[in-house]
Amino acid sequence: MKKAILPTILLVLAYGFWISPDFKEISAGVAIFLFGMLALEEGFKAFTGGILERLLRKTTDGLWKSLSFGIVSTTLMQSSSLVSVITISFLSAGLIGLAAGIGIIFGANLGTTTGAWLIAGFGLKVKISAYAMPMLVFGVILIFQKSKNLRGAGYILTGLGFLFLGIHHMKEGFEAFRDTIDLTAFAVSGYTGLFLFTLLGVAATVIMQSSHATLVIIITALAAQQVTYENALALAIGANIGTTITAILGSMSANVQGKRLAAAHLIFNVATAAIAIGLIYQIGQAVNLISSWVGIAADDYTLKLAVFHTLFNTIGIVVMLPFINRLVVFLTRIMPEKVVAAATPKYLNDAAIELPDTAIEAVRKETLRLFDNAFAIIAHGLSLHRHDILSDADLREVVKRTRKPIEIDLDAEYETTVKGLYGEIVNFISRAQVTMNEQQSDELFRLRAAGRDIVEAIKDTKHMHKNLARYIVADNAGIRDEYNKIRVQLGEVLRRLGEAREHGDDASVILSFDTLRVEMEQEDSTRNGKLESLIRDKMITPSMATSLMNDATYAYDVAKNLVQLGEVLFATGDSGLRQAERDMALTEEEIDDVRSGLGKAK
Image (cartoon, rainbow, N blue to C red; front, side, top):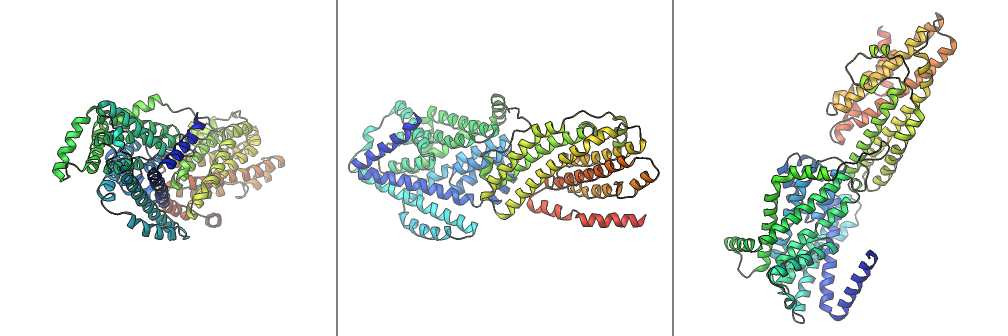
C-alpha cells in the first residue's frame, strides 16, 4: 500500500500537467515554495551551533517563557517544523522538560499564523517576484563561501527568494486557472463542507509536510476566487491538524520524551480544530467584528482568513494552557519510560544528533551513565559498597570493618554493563562530528577520552583485584595495611567524584581533584620510601613487595583516569567556562613539583 502512494501521486500530477498548463504553474509554485522552506531551514540550522541553543536554555525555565520562545522563534524563522525538530532534539537529550517542550509547541502554533498575515497582507498585494530575483542571486553567491555563517545567510536569502517566487507562481497559476475552470463549482456549504474541506486540508499538509505551503495555496486560491471563504476556513483548520505530521515523524527517531511531545502536539491541534469547528459561526462573527475594528474591508477575505487563523489558535492556547501539567501527567502515564538495560543507550538517538549542542549533551549524559556503571564495578573491585563510599562515614573505619572481599566477576560486569555502551558512544560520536565545527568536535573528543578513561580505570582495577582480594584478609599486617591504604585512597577519589556528580554547579569540586592527585603521590608507598622500609624491616616478603609495586602503579593509574574523566564530565557551565576550569587544573609536571616541594618541606 505504502509503495503505491508515491507512484499514484506522480501519475496524478503528470495527468494534471498534460491537461492544464495552469495546473503545471500552480504545482511548480508549490514545489518552489517547499524547496524554499528547505533552504530556509538549512540556513537557520547553520546558526544553531550555540545561539539558538543558549536562547532555548534560558527561555524555557517557565511556561510563559517557553510559550514566548515558540511564538518568537516561529515568527522569525517562519518554520514551525524546524522549531518542532529543535524542541524534540532538546527534549531527547534531556536539556528541557516535557512541560517546557509543550509550551514551545503551543507558542509555535500561534507563531505560524504570522505566515498567513505576511502572505495575505504583503505577498498578494506586491509583486514579490521582483524581490525574489536579487535574493536568489546574492543567496547563491553566499552559499559558495567557506564561512559557515555566510553559507547560512546564503541559504536564508535563497530560501526567502524561492518562497517569494513560489507564491508568485501559485498566484499567477490560480489567476489563469480562473479563466478555464471555476473550482468554486465544487464548493460544499454547511457542516458537510466544513468536515470535507478540513480533511482535504489535513491531506494536503500531510503530503507536503508544511502548513505554510498549504496556507499559501489556500490564500492564493481564495484571492483568485477559486475557493469559497467558508471552505477556505475549513482548509486552514485541516492544515493545523496536518502540521502535526512533522512532529510525529521527528519523534520516531526520538526517545519516549520526544514521542510524548508529538502526542501533546497532536492532542492540542485536534482539540483546537474541534473548538474551531464547533464554534465556527461564532468565531466567524468575531472575525467580522475584529476586521471592522482594524480596518479590514468586508470583502478582503484573505486578511479575514489570517484573522481567523490567529483567533482560533489563540482560543486553543487559552483553553489548553491551564491543562499543561495534567497533560504531562497523562502522557507520562500512558507512555511510561521503558526500563533501559545498563548497556543500552538512553540518550543516543537520531533526534539528538540533529543539532551539535544536543548531540554533545546526549553524549555527556550517556557517558555519565557509563561512569555510574563503572562506579559500582570499581567499588566492588575494591571490596567496598557504593553506599559506604557516598556516605559521610570515615573511609578508614569503613575499610576496617569490611575485610571480607566482595565476590565479583569483573570481566563479566565489564562485558555486560560497560563495553557495549562505550561502543555505542564511540559510534554516535563518529556520526555526530560530521556537521560540527572545531570547538564542538574538540568537546566530543574530550568526552570520548573520558569514556576511554572509564574503561582504563576498570581494566586497571581488574589487574590489581586478585592481589587486593588476597591481601586484605592476609595475616601479615604490613601488606594488609598497605592494600587497605589503596582502598581508602581510591574510595576517596570515588567519593569526590560522587560529590561532583551530585553538585555539578560547584567549580571548586572539580579543582579539588588536584588535591587528590597530590595526596595519592604522597601516600604512594613505592615513592615515599615506605616500601623499602617494609622490606628492610622484613615486614613483607619480596614477593609481596613485587605485588605491591605493581598494584600501587595500577592504583595510581585508576586514580589518574578517574580524575581526568571527572574534569571532563563534571565541569560546569558553557564550553568556555568548562575549558577555563580544565585549564586551572594542575598538570602532571606541576603535581610532581608540588609533591617534591612538600617532600623537601618535611
